[in-house]
Length: 397
Image (tube, rainbow, N blue to C red; front, side, top):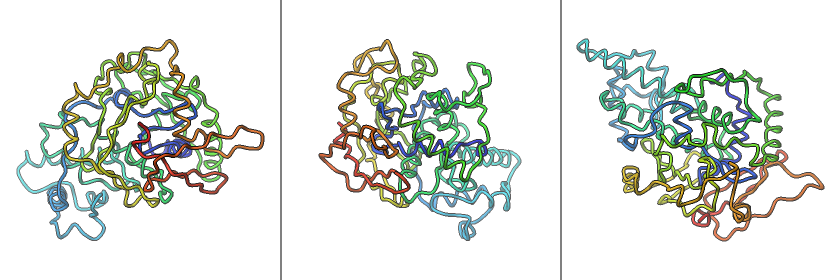
């Protein structure tokens, strides 16, 4: 899929991503990638055990050494870093270990899944490096089906979108197939051709993504995409692309709280995107917030820290499930909102990315009561970065 990714389109959406809410801020409000989107687009499980296992660097090195027949001391010289392992080393050193035939076959499967998942759901910017943490969930093949792989992939993508909003970031990683297919599902304006597909097939496989040129043409597309997104209204969005009941078979999509992949945890709040469930959008309640966060301009020290007890929220899904009928009501038109929502949103967001020309209405200014100084939003306006201080988590409540 890398050859078919429209990086200009993805960049235009990254500019509208808000890491504190994990939603895209559009002129008409918030919209995001939800767990039932992951289910329909990729057809991987979003329910199951939370992927919250962590391990020390020494443990990860030892596990990797078993896969590639290298001692811990030999895994240096570019093969090993704290967050990734060089995929090329696996091919150069071989994927098997010495042992009985059964053990070799098990290791073959483990290595194959490690490379597969590292090349699809948990992609690194280099496109040829793999996160050793993936191996934590592959050591026992009997437990493979127990994990919520879709929730882990979404948490990882949320984090990479947040890192990509930093001024010093030069790329985007994560499951970009999911992101691009999600854009196609919700925004008809950007859709390519589509093939007929069976109801149970991953919807991502039905889109015929064209190979688009880069360079100056990509930059021109980016400018055009920005303008189109600035002009979008709620009526231009397909709010329920899988049908008005597309979420009913995915109860986990209404979960509210953090989702995880190993050491990465990100907040997930469907109450900010009720229109994606076919319900009228109301002013959302307060979010479950992390214990601490640090999002510098460079992105290299990007940290969001959650207390260990938040893992229990995933297991208590009954208590953490958003009750749609209690929160809102089904709407006749998918883009319906309460009257107060627009004023609430405009005092907490910036509705446009491109610089308005003379004669166009100016966007409403941000109403800043409580500023989080460690979180800055960057908008590229007329080739100049203008920095806005974003509102703290608690101000969104």
